Length: 278
Image (tube, rainbow, N blue to C red; front, top):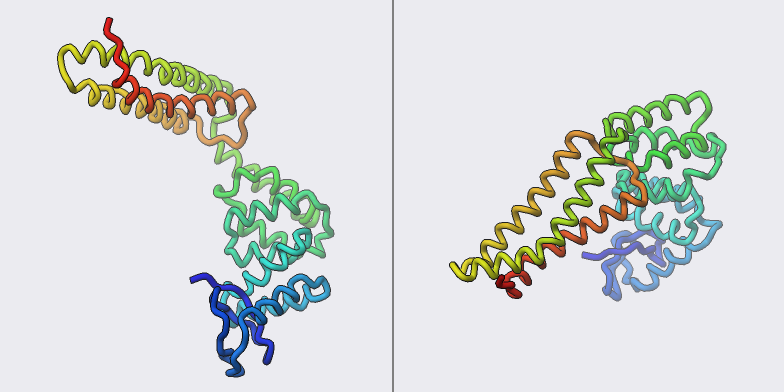
């Protein structure tokens, strides 16, 4: 059920409103109120810069009283209206239970903004909650955040922690052989996938002389080839570990390889329809 935040025009109690419900009875004062009017009060307050500190204080109380849903909705409106205010953005991340997409958006917006540590007292709590393998692809943003938000005597601790996580995560992926073998897999697999189209047509033409099951045989071959490629990629990952960044040339080869897999699947079907008889 879709809900939105509202504020009773009579007693000023915050409410959760069902969307498309025109009227409701306020559970506190018992008055029948307009859902549109209740929502309009919230929209107006969350767009008023002078009300932000009061809304933040109310959200803290509302979380303790009702849980995170209602304050999350209020802070989301504030952040939408004032995207460059850091405190409500951080509180929204906290209320999301440090969900990775919210963490990344917060880091992307504020990691490179220099702040006095006194003005961001939550910085260390944020890092303690978020620094793990799930967010390690944002390692550079975390480093910038530490340098710009954390007090000097604690920066080395968090920078070392980031370095340890990155080292443990990437294992041997920065070795030259890791990239060489991966590029080889991309190129060879792409060529094989494209070559499947004429090979399937020739094979279907030859097999059609002996059996009507050439389509099923082509399917088995196509599945075997694609499965082998995926298995080799898996073996590469097990040997060399994870990667945090890739070059443009590697990205291009990866895109071509992924596109060729679609081509290989199409070759199974079309290669069985368009037979070549030698």
